[in-house]
Image 1 (cartoon, one colour):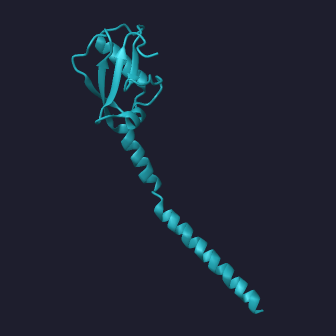
Image 2 (image 1 turned 60 degrees about the vertical axis):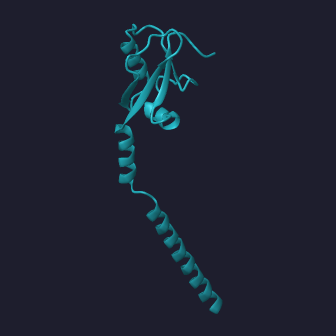
Image 3 (image 1 turned 90 degrees about the vertical axis):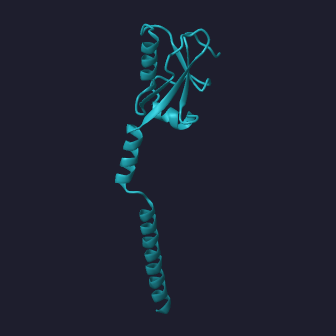
Length: 132
């Protein structure tokens, strides 16, 4: 009988320990409201873009602009074509940090978070393909 009582007591202790561990984990996790607010703050922020021409591409008078972080990169391309006075069907290639050409559906905020230097996302632009 003693062995049975000890086993039941052991099971109760284990269950109590599991409950306390689950409560600890729940207390460490942020609330859903906190997560949503953080996401909204990231979506509503503005990021700085610095444009730099490559080769014989026309220069901009103003080189730093800000854009909503939730915008797609294609909006940057359209904006730059407009600023340079290029037709919308003309070729304009944009590179981030002279390294890669992002996809038009890439979110600007994601690029900024990963590749910004000195609080600016450097966008190099040219009319023809500049890098292999």
